[in-house]
Length: 153
Image (cartoon, rainbow, N blue to C red; front, side, top):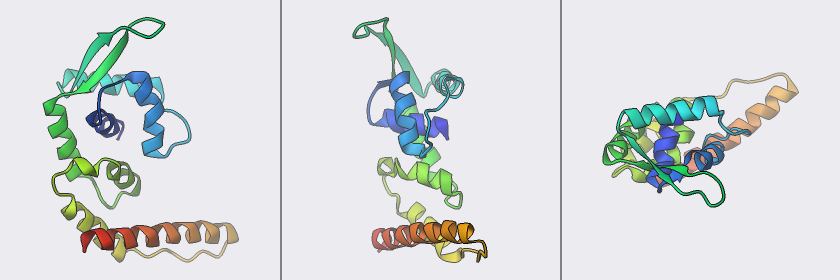
């Protein structure tokens, strides 16, 4: 997922690693930044694959920054990854949802996600804390169902 998020963020324009490190949690919903030990190896893999280019640009105050740019091959890979996202995997879906605007036609993915949500039920919970959790999940599910139905219609 980190590679997908990097590709998606760079589709909006060039950025350096530190900017990505700050923006990734906004997409993934995690409360803390992605670790450098996860981010920079992912950038290195994307660069080695020709999906991202790296160019040194002068820093404002300190050393030069490595600015990352999505290549045309990177854009195609982003589209491929988005089109093949597992719509039944909630975290993967919510991450991909942030970038679906790059797809020429996201309708098929939306229909698949809608079918998954319509087929799911939420298990009953006896514990009051689990009941709260289920209520929150049910509200989120209903909101997503309403949005999907409106978009697919």
